[in-house]
Length: 180
Image (cartoon, rainbow, N blue to C red; front, side, top):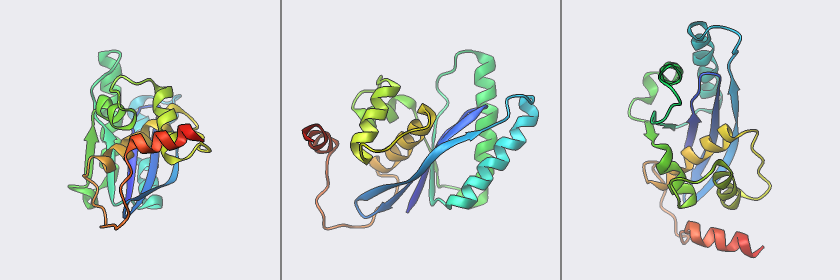
């Protein structure tokens, strides 16, 4: 099972794909989709749609997790974000009906760090503890997308195969990481 997490935006969108195999979760890739800020938003939306469509076709996720619309600095910013998010969602197509999930930013942070008001740096640090210290994020948009995908998996909405291995809690992962 492959889950694609997306942190939507009108100028760039973070994305992260993770693979779930039983109780093992592996990072496939994460990065940023950049949208040309020199063109008007109305024209840029076609690029948002096209790049998202290409990402979906390349990765072939089974499920998709997005950050929900909750906070924006202003009404115009919220409107731009909503339009870009609509272009992203429309790129998924009919094949993803019932397979698209959204999560509030505070829930994502709380799930990954244990604190709903965690900083971006705190989210990055928690993800490095979970996926390995060597992971480097090109921006916070990419790490946010990974956190969104992981939130989806940890909240049990992504089907998991039965496994005979013992589950690890985030607390045990952090304790092991701090010990190294």
